[in-house]
Image (cartoon, rainbow, N blue to C red; front, side, top):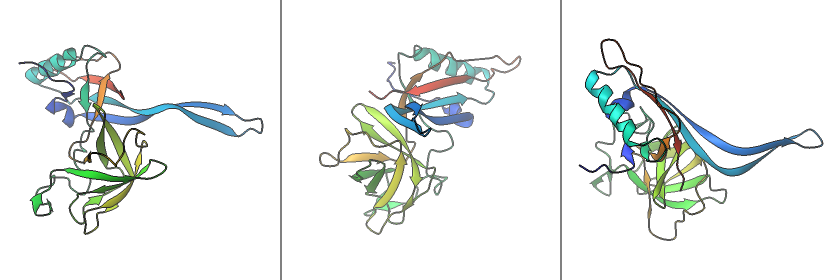
Length: 219
């Protein structure tokens, strides 16, 4: 069967450890008066470090094959944040939530973007839908998916709209005047490639654990 990219993470990777941090591309200097000066020279990108739990032999082999299929930094995978598939207020998912009488799909619609492009309004949500600081969402930009973390959340109005502050800022290519832009809250993700050699130390009895790192692909 043909492999489709970007590849989803192996299921076992959701049960291990992960650090997800924003890599900022900035130039820094001091002014003549001694004040720090910083400028953004390129868009910020997410970088992730994954380490699975101790795996059995079959899962260990499966993850090894998955990593090899990425061909180092040539093929992409869907980088998600383990243990944050859903917002903090919904640790078991969205069962029972509805929008206009239909089950909530886990996705809203981007309706407006603030002038600083770090504030947004999302609609088509269940009334009272709660989003908290630290929750995640993703939106499409061209053929890629961009991941954002919520810095200031809120509860959706009776019309299903909520105002959010996010990081990193929304890409300039994203506009709300054309086709609806979906905002994903169910397992939000971004495109990544492997950014370092992966490690697969073998346990004498079982398969062992696997560690790998990824860096976001923007275009």
